[in-house]
Amino acid sequence: MTGSPPSDDDAVDDSGDGDSVASVPFPGITSCDQVTAAIPGFVGSMSLVGDSVDDGSVMCMWAAPEGGPYASILISQNTMPTDEEAKTGAKMINLQATSFTSPELSGLGGVGWRWTADGGPDTTGYSTVYVPGVSVEIHRGKDGPDGDTSYAPADTEAIDVTLAILKL
Image 1 (cartoon, helix red, strand yellow):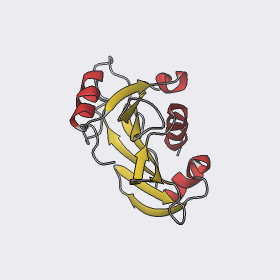
Image 2 (cartoon, helix red, strand yellow):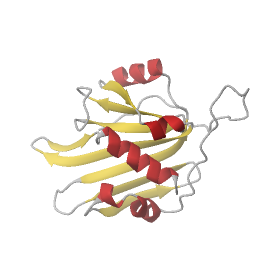
Image 3 (cartoon, rainbow, N blue to C red):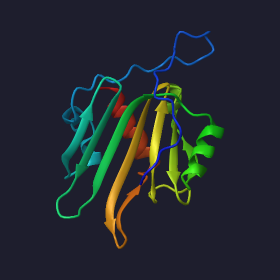
């Protein structure tokens, strides 16, 4: 799946006026091996096949052998889109934006967005979970009759993966 909704790659300014939610510090990730260890259930029998780590973003990619499932995660310093920005961004890439959350995610001031063709989880697309200052974009993949397809994980799985990563 190509394309992501519009985002601001600059770190969130948390020196504000007191009305804003404090930013979550960017996780202290120095390698994708750390990410793999934090989310063993998500990557299952896959092996790390690609990685990129710098001060403001981390990209990790995993794949199973012989056309099996694959996954990727992009962790970056980011701002949370408004509902209007998310829905407009989704339309620009021909997807529907559907928000989701949990009590723990809401407690961090966060929200998840599922960007899918039909609005449903576990369908063609991907998910991004935002907390103030950090976003975690999550892709699952599998081979299908039309080639590789990226799909959004279940909402609870996207939240669990994000919360595990934020603890690094």
